[in-house]
Image (cartoon, rainbow, N blue to C red; front, side, top):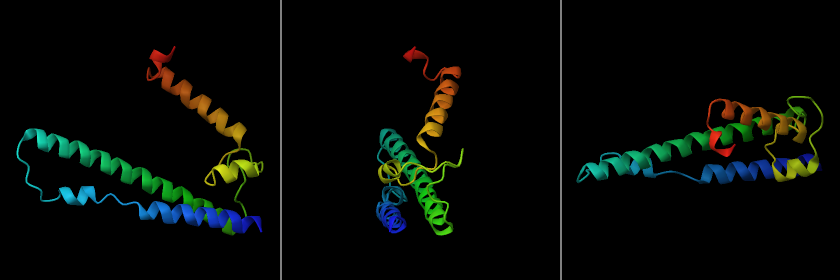
Length: 124
C-alpha cells in the first residue's frame, strides 16, 4: 500500500534525525579555556551547535506533522491549494507540504522579500 511506503520513509527519516546528536554543546560545559581565542572559538562552536539543534527540532516537527497527516488521511494534500501533491515529489521529499506550483510561488515571494531587504542585492 502507498500509505505504508510513505510511513516507512517518514519513520526512517525520524529515526535518522533522532540518531544525530550534538554532544559538543554538552562537552563545552565546565570546560576551562586557556585564552580569549579559545573562548571565542568555543562560543562560536556552541552557537553553531545550538543552531543545528534548532533546525533538527524543526525538521522533527515537520516529520511528525506529516505522520499525523498520514494517520488522518490528509497526507499529500497541498496545504495552500488542496490539490494532491505529485507522488514523485513526495518520494523525493516526503515532508513536502506544498505542491510544486505553490512551493514555486512561495519561493518567488521569499526571494522578493529578501531582495526588498537588500539580502540579495549583490545578485542583481
